[in-house]
Length: 93
Image (cartoon, rainbow, N blue to C red; front, side):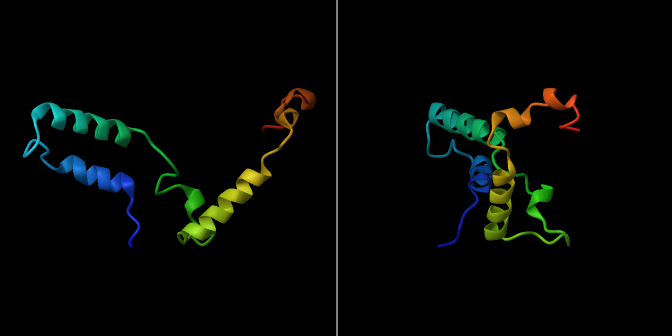
């Protein structure tokens, strides 16, 4: 079974005339819900630099997941490691 991008599916459904075969109040409700979902950005944008390797080639989903796992693992575990007060505000520069 093909994997479907839910965002694109909702965009397509949003182009349909829902008033054909549905009461107006139901069609309005569905259109509002689709609009709210589409207005919320989830995940990485399609043109995010993290989606590409050093040669500019688009990463596969597997390699993107590995890259993002590495980024998350690189985050400091100790909350104090994020503080710049101990280093004269230079640790974040």
